[in-house]
Image 1 (tube, chains in turn purple, yellow):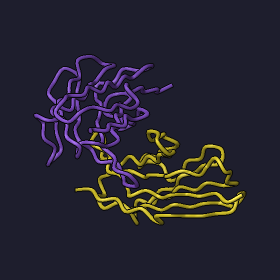
Image 2 (cartoon, one colour; image 1 turned 120 degrees about the vertical axis):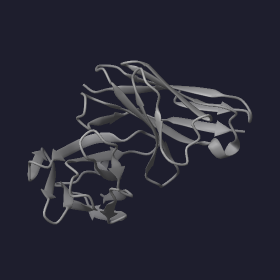
Image 3 (tube, chains in turn cyan, purple; image 1 turned 90 degrees about the horizontal axis):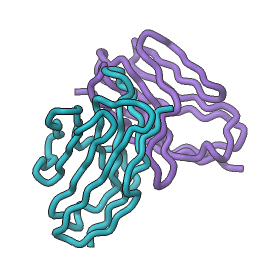
Image 4 (cartoon, chains in turn brown, cyan; image 1 turned 30 degrees about the vertical axis):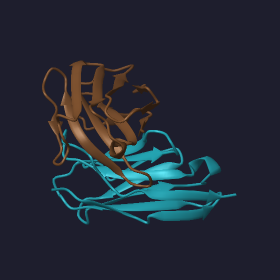
Length: 116
Length: 111
């Protein structure tokens, strides 16, 4: 159990366009989901925490107008990178918390974004 | 805020030997300590976790120990196999608060 999927697994887009990444918890409901960014050979950097039905909480330095997060249901959260630029190219990973307040996070397989 | 330090950054062991990765945390209020394994190009996989009311937890070849007094916890992998090669991350959190990750350890199992 505790399976999280992400779609797409990789995407290439042109500079200035927007890209949406979906994160789904397949076999459990997740009140809270998280979005991370990971650079090569580095640890995970938390971008934002999303709670179902409410606005996401962004980490310091993360532009909320650039990285739009929506958590409309207990199994789906989306991250939209707006007006993407080459510096937004990265590996984006979501996670979902199983249970409420457990801290147990299960990660998706990640999405490789390349902006040309 | 919480800070997690992880050592070593790289570890190479012979197949069949044991591997140990250590993490220290700064906030004594932290009470949840998961370990993740990440293979190249994939998302992290939760392999074992421990809560502050337990000193040790074991799952087959993997075990985690927690020393609350010293504020450190360790991952132990016994009888290592080539498929154990990956990057391992420790993390710590206080209840439902965000996880704070260590810097990662690249483990290589030599056949």
